[in-house]
Amino acid sequence: MRRGYRLPFVVFLAPALLVYTMFGIYPIVDSLRLSLYTGADDGGVAFVGLANFVYLLTDQFAAPRFWNAFVNNVQFFAIHLIVQNPIGLLIAGLLTSGFLRRSEGWYRTLIFIPTTLSVVVVGFIWQLILSPLWGFVETPLLGLESTALPTLSLMSVWQYVGIPMLFLYAVLVNIPRELDEAARIDGASGWQTFWRVKFPLLAPMFGIISVITYIANFNAFDLIYSVQGPFAGPNFSTDIFGTLFYRTFLGAQTATGSVTLGAAVASLMFIIILIGVALYLLLVHRRLRTYDLSS
Image 1 (cartoon, rainbow, N blue to C red):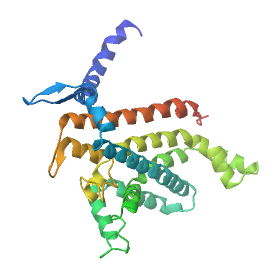
Image 2: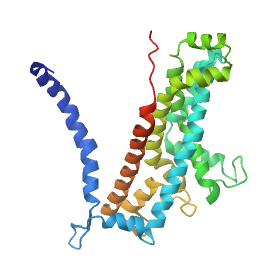
Image 3: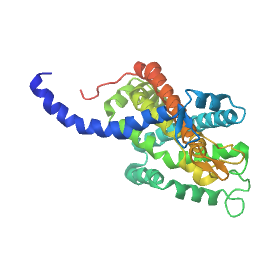
């Protein structure tokens, strides 16, 4: 880049970089710094190194809660990955197949509407639907340890399935019909056409959706809190990192919150998300191919 172009380049980038540093990078760095301290008797903080992390991962009372939240969060993400994204792909395929014809826009809007609803509203509606007293099921799905987390996960899937549907729909409508027709002339069935022609074109977007789902699920909090409260009952069976962080940082009922211990939980959440995204970029994303369909 020539020197004459550097100054306006820096001037236009500087405000965005400054805002991103203040509201994106600084809170992360300060949270990591705070996780290395603990509350002192004089009201300040004292440096303790990695003691907060050792406490969360090994203490006989704290560690079971942390690992329980980790396992629940993995299950929460797995249900979204296995159920939400394939359903989004199926709906996007139906919308672009021509089967629905002129009602395609209506279906696309109806499926996306739950995404725009407040999580509190969604939680309240599903609590009414699943209530054994006045709902449609006799089993208290939200009151049993074995069914509470899968039920909450499917509630979240119902609300957000419109997002992968919309992303995949945008890719499918841009695939030239000539590719589909050429595959059929060569004798390929509908499934072979989808799997060998369309899915390779969808794979990069499918990967991006999976990463977004992973990050969103490991930062999830609002639906669990609005339905099951801060203790994520019954018996912490729906506890995930978001609710664990809330109780650790702010406290709940008689339990006192700890800013430094909460910062340690937030730091571990950040590290786990960072590891997952890095593994995707190193092991999966590099193997994906992009195709130019404009020519």
